[in-house]
Image 1 (cartoon, one colour):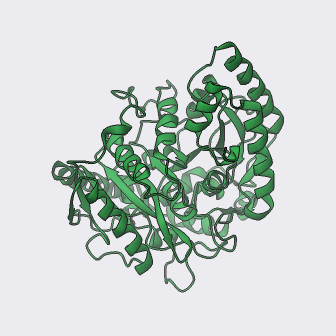
Image 2 (cartoon, rainbow, N blue to C red):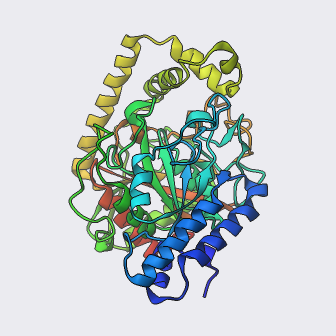
Length: 462
């Protein structure tokens, strides 16, 4: 049998059912692994070993009696330190938040997992308030890549991605406002899904508004579907949450890709300069989709780069999240965050509404595009992981993280489901393929990703 830390959640649950091992043994192994990797990659803000082992012991007794709370009972999961977890401080990578708070409430996704008996291993690292596409912060330092610790894990859910990649729990909760589950998934070689906006309730509401999503980060699409089924349940604290979906994500996995209309856009019509190694790996994976029966056409959506509109929305959100801070607290912020806060503070209501107009037009164009195509496929990122501790690759000429993430943030603006699938290596570093579907068609994204897993295309397939 493989090491317990190498097993997917679906395999762990099968082992629980068969009595091959139990939640306590699995949790001990995951905690040991978390402690081993922490000095090198810095994936965790804190581990919750005592609480995790108590929850694992209670789960083991339920499995013994046949009274499980749900399909994730006893499975280890990590929680990004943006989301509330009862009993643990949520400091969001910032020295401006007092850890001596009450911390007596769960975020909706965390609450659903607690109700279903999941085991919380700990809180994972994030840049300050999740503001950028790499993971380093004044509070927690730098999170590093599992494949090469001299390089970044990506962000802002970098700790979650590194933990999953290295076996410190098969499931993780991340957040994504501009690519923040997909970016680190691509850099670390795991799977991540940004669901349709509202599919997973979010509370407290993000200062970045309806750009912000909660999504599963896992090794496989099957595990992501299992996690999504648990967390995509309504919560009265989020007035924008969607009603329950039409069926189980797990049950929809097996449809395959035969007959699906797939648009492959390798560079968004020449707008994006993609590293040749990344481009080659993604193209091979797309050829496999065609071999599995999808109708693949190389074409581009009508997608002029919406970065200025995104910056208006994003920088205004950053200004809002720090609005109540005094001068001394602002001096303690990440310097890059201070810069975008200043820019966001200068924006007017008319600037913001113009960005909303641009966003709505982008959504209209993508809606029309999906009248003709079931899926859009792109690289997740045009580059592989670069040096740790930098916001942009050295020598790239980019000023902000959005310069090297042009494939991800547009689909936060349109609220579409989008996933990063690990489809190979370029120069020894992981490459992600992005799958995008029309709003509410999360099932198509998961089906296609699962088909790639089953075909052996992915780095960590089923």
